[in-house]
Image (tube, rainbow, N blue to C red):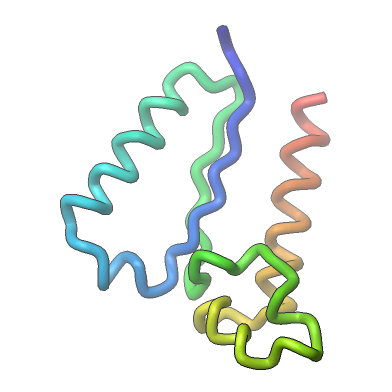
Length: 93
């Protein structure tokens, strides 16, 4: 059954710190799902870390969590996430 899939990956330092076999496994699993996806998107956001799409680093009472976003500006990470997710759901409904 065809299904819509959107992967938003944090491509910050993971592409240089994870072992190549782990990165390969992530890509292989993603590709397996995307083969039957209609539509299917695999997006890697440069400079983002795992928690880039949360609002943790935007909140004033959690200043230390800015590091969780990676090198990307927190407001940019939120904007990118918002645009991609909104666009994805606009095209799949």
